Every structure is written in structure tokens, then in C-alpha cells.
Image (cartoon, rainbow, N blue to C red; front, side):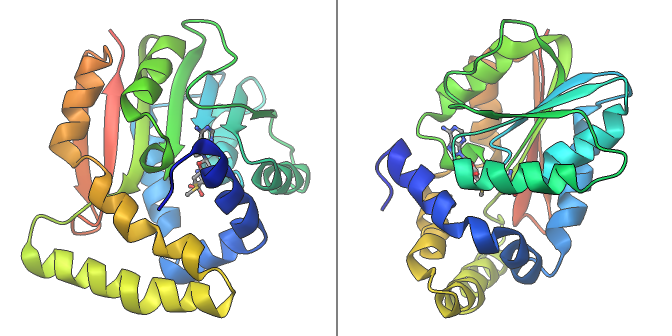
Length: 233
Ligand SMILES: C[S@@+](CC[C@H](N)C(=O)[O-])C[C@H]1O[C@@H](n2cnc3c(N)ncnc32)[C@H](O)[C@@H]1O
């Protein structure tokens, strides 16, 4: 079981070399569709200054980079240096190269002034932070008034058969595949982290408590994933 920020960071640094490949295999490529939906929901537009929180190897930040174009700028923030290095390499290979600044920092203590960003995304990060209410407060602090953030993560389906399928998939596909790569422990944490993760309704309540004027949770992929969309007044 994960108990500290440094353990979480160490897990993601160990996963880094195979992270992108595993995401494609384990979601059958579907994570790309869910990330496109997240991009749409954050309402980033050309020229915006955007944040991708817990950016990992940079999937969402690169999508944001394309969306904001040459007149915009993206900050990809993560505390795992190995994943940030992969994100930087992927960015350097793009043409035209998007304006993305990769920042090694803690999502709970962001190195940005208040009201800095026009839009933000976070994919598969909120479940992993040690202090979810604190992270939402920090996100609220750095967004401009009127700006939105879209937060993609796992979700528990409400139907029993959906929950049973998700658990079967985690136990019989995700963990064994990760085990083949010597990463059993790193992927076995998903199921317990999902048990602890607030459901969509609770996420909405936490977002409201963090100060967001509007908060809506959209279950996707038959409720196995969800996107929390929040807007600052
Ligand atoms: C499952 S990965 C998601 C990466 C990427 N957003 C994606 O969708 O592929 C979770 C990421 O959250 C980062 N993370 C977890 N807690 C963090 C924190 N407190 N501050 C910064 N990054 C954090 C990890 O280092 C890891 O890169």
C-alpha cells in the first residue's frame, strides 16, 4: 500500500520506460479517446496559457500544446523526473515543436501565482495525490476566474456487473501483463487506490468545498472512467 509522496514518485519513476506502451495495451488504445474528451471539456483555446497537472510522460500536455498553438503556452507539472524526461523527449520530436515548459513540482504546492491559467487538465493524477482536497484547492488557486479544468481518472461503475468486469480486468489482464514486465506491484496498486478514490458525486462535493462554482462529474466508458469538470467563479 502506498503511504507517502516519495513512494508514489518512486513507483512512477520505475514505470517510466514502459508507461506509454502499457497504457496503449491495457486500455486497447482507448485512453487516447478519453484524453481527447478531457481536452474538449477543459475548453482550452488558441493563445491560452494552460496547465497539465501530474503530466507524466506528457500525453495531455502535448494535446494541449496543439490546441493552444504557437501563441499559447503549456506548463506540464509532475514530481517524477524520469517521466518528465520522457515528456521532454517526446516534445522535442514534435514538429512544429509546441511551447511546453516541463516543471518538476508537487501538485500540492504549485510554483505559480494566483489566477495564472486559462484552462487545466489532469489525467490519472488526482487518485494518486496524497491530499485530494488540497490538490483541488491548489488547482482552484492557480486558475483564472472563469477558467475550467477537466480531471480524468478511473471510476467505479454503479452497476454490479460493470464493477465485477472492472475488477476482473484489473486482476486478470492489467496485473498479469504488468507482471510480465516485472511491474506487478506497481500495477497491483490500481485496485486499492480506486477503492479509496472518491466516487463522482463525492468528487463534485470536494470540488465545491475547494471553491469551484461549478462542478460536474461525467462517467465515461460504461462508468469505468470519469471526468470531473470544474469552473472557477
Ligand atoms: C498515472 S500517472 C498519469 C500520467 C499522465 N497524466 C497520463 O495520463 O498518462 C500519475 C502521475 O501523477 C504524478 N503525481 C502523483 N502525485 C503527484 C504530486 N503530488 N505532484 C506531482 N505529480 C504527482 C506521478 O508522478 C505520475 O506521473
